[in-house]
Length: 84
Image 1 (cartoon, rainbow, N blue to C red):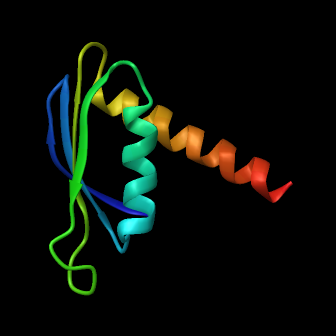
Image 2 (cartoon, rainbow, N blue to C red):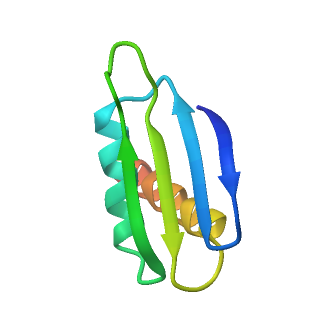
C-alpha cells in the first residue's frame, strides 16, 4: 500500500492511497468514524479506473495521523481474526 501525504496538520490529515478502490476506502472510513475522537472522515474517488482515493480526516482531539493508524490496526486485527 503506497500512501501519498497531501497535508498533515495536527488535527487534519489529507492523503491519497495509490491503487485502492471503493472497497478498502469504505472500510477505512467506517473504522475511522467508529473512533470517538474522529469528527470527519471521508474520501473522494473521481473514477475508480483512473484515480486513487483521496482521504480527509479531522479529529476533535489527539492527532489525525494517530486516528488513521488506529483504524488501520483495527482492520488488520479484523482480517487476521477472519483468517483464523
